[in-house]
Amino acid sequence: MSGSLVKPVYPRLRCQNGGTDDSAPYYRRDLALVHHLGFAFHANETAPGIMALVEPLLTRNGLVVELGCGSGLLTRHLIDAGHRVIATDASPAMLELAREVAADAEDIRLLVLPDDPIPPADAIVSVGHVLNYLPDEAAIDRALVAIADALAPGGILAIDLCDFGYGEARREAPNLGRVTDDWAIVTEFSRPSRGRFIRQMAIFSLNDDGSWRRDDERHDNVLIDVSRVPALLAGRGIQSTIGSSFGAERLPAGLRTVIGHRTDG
Image 1 (cartoon, helix red, strand yellow):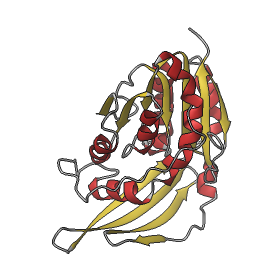
Image 2: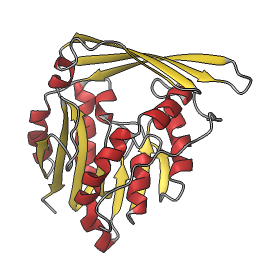
Image 3: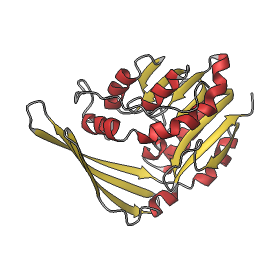
């Protein structure tokens, strides 16, 4: 891989997301843009480790499928490193942004886990605990099986998942707020049970006429015992390990990596 460091990517987009689906449960147009503009650090920090893992694909022009690509920040890093990428997300608003940030991806498409088919891939990557947004633990298991089955022989897996420890580390987390000239967000955290972690967010966005609009989203994440995932994947031919990072970055407490490869076929 050329270069020793990956430069952060913070594309500045206008406050527009025309044609997106405002009925989507997660990451509607306003939060999608706020997340892109203000919370790019996770994708940028995990990118060096992810790209080191998938670097062997470059010699055989392998295909990377990204699940939960968001606004395309990690996608951009992968493309710039020379990878062929199919980027997917369940949020139409995020996909609109990704089509601008990573317009030269091989494809950018709507994909809703666990039931939508995952394209066959030489590597499947995902950051931002995408699977924890599924409705229950059974749905997460089904998604993991689908991911495993989509990997080609010798295929590479690199995803992150929230463990029970994610909620425990945030048991007394205070409310958070952030304000810029164009947007503001206030987030309240709750943990109704060991296996649930909730973010209740109020998002304020500046209109072209100087007025402000508000949207509210509740993000309900399912927490799991990530230590049991390798056994599940092993039953589908994937050898994997659990870790605390993809590379040299330091992930938040309770966010674990699952890194593996297909050993059969």
